[in-house]
Length: 133
Ligand SMILES: [Zn+2]
Image 1 (cartoon, protein in one colour):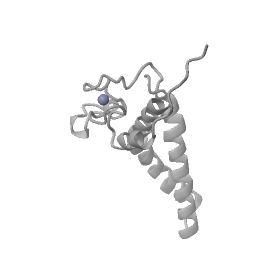
Image 2 (cartoon, rainbow, N blue to C red):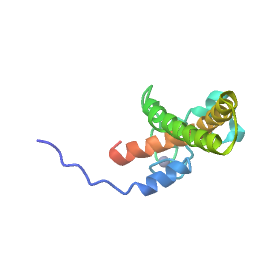
Image 3 (tube, rainbow, N blue to C red):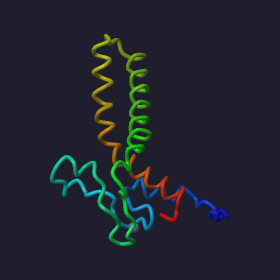
């Protein structure tokens, strides 16, 4: 017999915590090291092991954040790039090379700046869909 699932909680508190890069469960502890404590580039991308306050594990297995990167980070980067390309193409008289450079460079920066939030939103979605984790 199948166990009845609990009704879904509201997503907005989880999303708010994710956008603040906070633990999706308690909202108190940070998900990542602050920028002034980064020792290497990899620290920017890697979440901490878990929440010291509530014990929620941020990364459960290798590849856990793969879909977060593909679905959230890459898609937002592509949408950003398409919008930027459209704005630049419509408003400035640039040749193709200039247009590509003016689009691709900001896309790389966008991707690096949004990777943490993509992982945080992924954690929030996971927590929202399966609160038992
Ligand atoms: Zn927590």
